[in-house]
Length: 136
Image 1 (tube, rainbow, N blue to C red):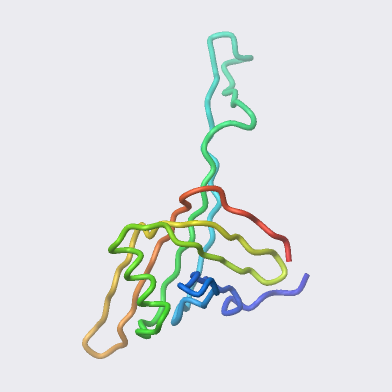
Image 2 (cartoon, helix red, strand yellow):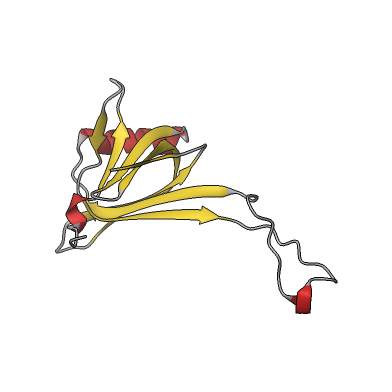
């Protein structure tokens, strides 16, 4: 497989017309899959090695991004979703890998800017239900 351009990774938010629009201005994006484990180690575990319960625990997805604040339509949806603390449908697309789609809550929304630089923002989305992975 050939190397991929990071700029081709996209985070999209579902708008009020049921279309997914790209969250504007993001320069870096990240996708993290999590699976908390359940430790079932006991006094008779072989040589005191940890034992984990397969197929159990809590699965989650975290999507994050950081970039230039553009004040676009997607920014307005993100802000409204954060202040209402409502789950909204998002997609993250990773070319030649796949797409993850599901409902997410905004955990972090951070705006920064320096005197002689552009305004930036950062967001962290956490899954709020089952997410669906589709291979591309």
